[in-house]
Amino acid sequence: MPFDPDLPPDGLRLLRRYHEATVQFHERRAEVRFIVDAASGAIVFPAEPGFVSATELVIHLPDEVTRHLQLAIEPAAIARPEAEECVDRWHAYHAAARTGSGGERTAWAWLRCEITGAKRPDAPGDVYDREALMRPNPLRKAEPRLVKHVNTSRDRLGWLARRHARVEVSDPLCVGVDPHGLDIRARFGIVRVEFDLEAGSPEQAQALIDAMLSKAA
Image 1 (spheres, rainbow, N blue to C red):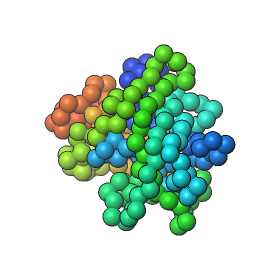
Image 2 (image 1 turned 30 degrees about the vertical axis):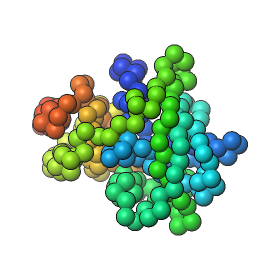
Image 3 (image 1 turned 90 degrees about the vertical axis):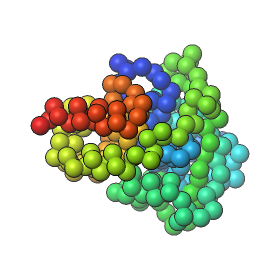
Image 4 (image 1 turned 45 degrees about the vertical axis):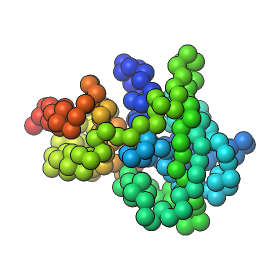
């Protein structure tokens, strides 16, 4: 989705705007689709096996040309992806895009990556440490209920995406909720709809969601 310069450049808010990136290991580069693990705040994605041997990777969000955030990450292979909640989450987010660049392939490895630091290339003074970005989603336990609640109003989700993210979504589906906003799955990727305020509780998140959806009624 488009970068909105009117919102504050909070590192965590900025990170959650993106679900596609370019990952770099020396001269090797690959386009990936990723999710933020709700339990740990780690970055999770499928990648070529060659990236597994790296001790540190650089990831450019949303890509190496339009860099709004650059992360240093430490990758670790997920031994049993079929047993991991974060891999299930990746499928929920990117189910419509499992093939091609950044999609799941049988021979690829699943990586869970800790963020060790980050910076904004377009604002050199803005740097973030691990603690600023590696945060679990505090709404994690309530997230399934909130997602289900949002999806009872799918006829209004398209309006919400158009009004707040300026994109048309013909078959929207909410797949995630965190204190900064909603993730809506579209056929072309993830559309981010942000709250004006940071939700401090599931009740506040639902109130913010209901206030936005009510305008489409």
